[in-house]
Amino acid sequence: MSLVISVTLLSGKTVSLEAEPDESVETFKSRAQEALAVGRGRLVDSTGGVLDEAAILQKSGLRSGDTLSLSMSRVCVQGHNGGSFAAILGDGFLVTWGRPEYGGDGGAAQALLRDVQQVQATEQAFAAILGDGLVVTWGATWQAFAAIRGDGSVVTWGHVEHGGDSNHVQDQLKDVQQIQATRKAFAAILSDGSVVTWGSLRHGGNSGAVQHQLKNVQQIQASLFAFAAILGDGSVATWGEADRSGDSSDVQCELKDVQQIQATHRAFAAILGDGRVVTWGEPSKGGDSSDVQDQLKGVQQIQASYFAFAAILCDGSVVTWGEKGAGGDSSDVQHELKDVQQIQATHSAFAAIRGDGSVVTWGCTFQGGDSSTVQDRLKDVQQIQATWGAFAAILGDGSVLTWGDPAWGGDAGGAQDHLKDVQQIQSSGNTFVATLGGGSVLTWGRSWQVIV
Image (cartoon, rainbow, N blue to C red; front, side):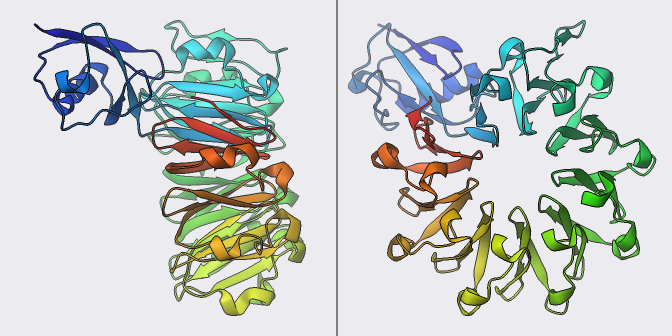
């Protein structure tokens, strides 16, 4: 006798399928994935156990009428400093949580947040790109209005000054490829390489002065107050508050063959094709690299704290500049900065992963610059993420180590015993979010809980 088994996703989408008792779990799962139009996942029973794909359905103890969950491996989390999060589930549905006034409640937009491809955030609002290239924005305050398009595909609301309302550019927001955000404004790259901006004028919400240059845009980077766009010919266009990195006129002649741009809160650093670096913005916040310019050769990657930069060179060494108290001075650990593969940053400290999986830290001690309490366990580190004042490292066995300010997630507390089989970590200003192997999401920092 055939079995009828339901398979449900985290979003609630469900399908019921007929199956023969001797059908393999793997075959049944493939049919469920096809019916739900999602990628690969794992079938989980009502007790939370993962079904053995090599087994047959009958031997797995399944009966007609049972419901299984399809746990997706892809859970992408985006957080922002206001303390709210948005998670893209494996089937493209988006869930939000955190402070409602900062976008933690999708509100009227929630019904539209399907087939989400990318989500970005300003300080108090979110913007999501849907599969058809349309954009949904939400967040900021409840005193704003909602605008629904005639086809019902897009709704926007939130405080204009924070980017939560894109109504005045909504007809332009089609086939969006990428979104970036300053503190209170968004910039979207369309498929034709043009750019649409909205939000606070002071923070880059108006690109009118450079709109004629914004053609064939390849990438956009944002500081707190300004945007910088890499154009197809390798040149750069900037806009936003002029004295806080929005004006690159002093170095414009050097900005050729730009490959990558990174930003502190008030300065930009561009890596050129030959490995040199060009900087602009507030000098003390990373905009002036003259003291280390002769060392900035063969640069492969740059990371930024709030007011300092750290560059990884082709030989695995590191060069730092900017505000010393924010990690701009790495002299105390310079001899350890060898074979560096990746760097992450809090507000005022850096953490570097070396080729052997060990970690070197520097900068503000209480914001993660001192990892001595966990140093002997920082081995086989795969990934590091940071809040304002703490770091979290995923080890090779899927466990997590934290250090830095306990108030900002430096102490995982009650969450520590649950941090196993961790696949990814994301963060907001004061909270970490870990995606576990089964697709559930665990948060800690101001508080801890399992979200989904």
